[in-house]
Length: 69
Image (cartoon, rainbow, N blue to C red; front, side, top):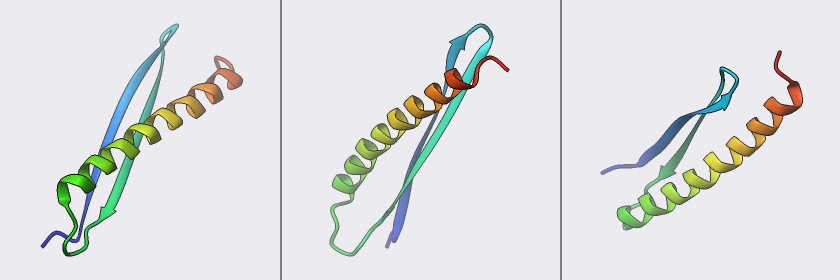
């Protein structure tokens, strides 16, 4: 029986001017007996998308605040 699984994603975003931003996120989901695996997977993927968007926004803002060097 599977006790947990993870879904992850990474993306490199071109910021222009030869700069890029790489973001990564991973969600680890515990699986209990009787859980609907497909539902858990769908929920994990939804949370991962939210996490990637939030991470992108925070990191992109930080890179703008910091300046080119």
